[in-house]
Image 1 (tube, rainbow, N blue to C red):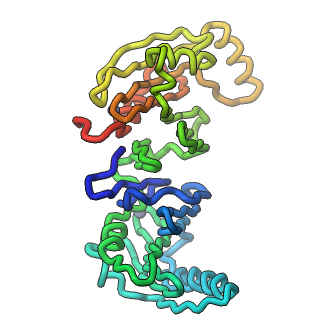
Image 2: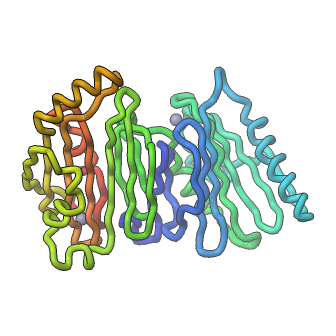
Image 3: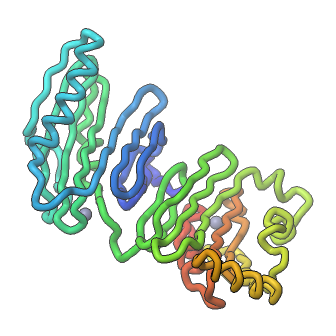
Length: 322
Ligand SMILES: [Zn+2]
Ligand SMILES: [Zn+2]
């Protein structure tokens, strides 16, 4: 619920983010932070493709990167016996104002077939990512304003040490050392699972819809205790009420029992892996958006600031006071 009045919203994935029209939604996604692909569609057609990968040494030759991209496209289109005209080196600054920040090398391109597309390949000297973006549109539509806003707002690395994740009207920030390991994107339930490289403790950000049904006969705390019973079982758990996002939220801390510590030490000797001893959750019901948000992390530390940071950086409803 983060779209603005003019129908724009933020999209964020793997450190890449930009403004997009609110009626564009995720059509395809693959890869990870190092290399990946995604596509955004409107109700009628695919509208935007984004490809990214980490560059090898030195400064890559973006004209060659774009040429390869266009050559691949021409191959596909020619097979379908459709004509295509391409322009590698299209002056994108004619449309996009301002261009993304000065620390990037930019190569514009354009193609025209039964549809048309404006594209931009970028290399960022700071994060060393190569990104190719293109926006496709019907042939007779003036899309200059659209392209300018999307490309101008494009960012390819985290600002302030946290990545913005924004998809399906979910919008939150996670410290950049966490990598997305798994995601579940279902109509009534979104789950994003992250881990760090130096341990394998999971940080989960979840959003449940259909709260009219879920909370018909339960308080949100009763629902949480039922839904996450296995997580809570065997833990010494405490619940604390905190104010966040204009809601009363619950902060949960749990510590595994003594029997578990003994078992854990034995297991760690055998496997040389770390096992978590604590769990930390923050959860709340957002009445405005009719959603339940749950942020949870397994940890070895009785104190955990990450869960609180992520919970406070979830945008749960529009016009919430900062
Ligand atoms: Zn960058
Ligand atoms: Zn809310």
